[in-house]
Structures are given as C-alpha cells and as structure tokens.
Image 1 (cartoon, rainbow, N blue to C red):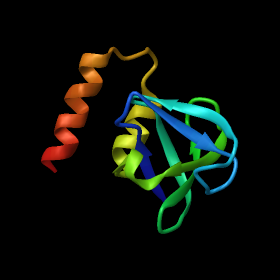
Image 2 (image 1 turned 45 degrees about the vertical axis):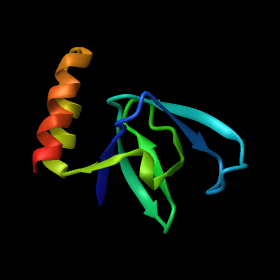
Image 3 (image 1 turned 30 degrees about the vertical axis):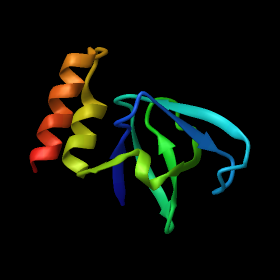
Image 4 (image 1 turned 180 degrees about the horizontal axis):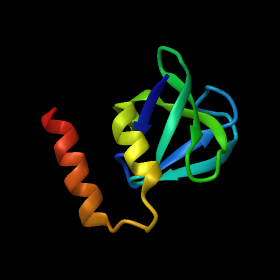
Length: 94
C-alpha cells in the first residue's frame, strides 16, 4: 500500500477520476491518506482524518513511507503549520 500527504493549501477530492466531476470533499495542507488505487493522472485515496474516499490529481500530493504515515496517525494533538513545514522539508531531502 502507498501513502501520501497533501503539500498544497487545498486539494479538491472528486467523485470520479475526472477534472469535471463533482468535488465531494477537500484535502487541506498536511493531511495524510492511504492511496487505494493509482492511475496515470489520478489516485483514489482514503483520508486518515475522516476515512472519506475520493480521487485527487497525482501532481497535488507527495508520497510518504508507511513509517511516517503511522507516526502521523499516532499523534494525539493537532500539529501547527511550522511543524508540518519542517516535515515537508525533511521529505524533500530524502
């Protein structure tokens, strides 16, 4: 299984893998998720926050490893943006 994190401020989640399909939800900066299905341009994901499923554009997220995903899942408190930026910088250095 693959995992991802939203690196943009807002990413639309679509009902089907198409730019013109209904936006059913949004991902916010720093939200993480499981990748359920991956295609050339789109990935079907399950948001860790509320288990909502939808399609997002592959250019609008960064893949992360399972260890980082599990670490984020184990956090009990809400993180502030500066901590998320630090995590993003660490990901880019990998």
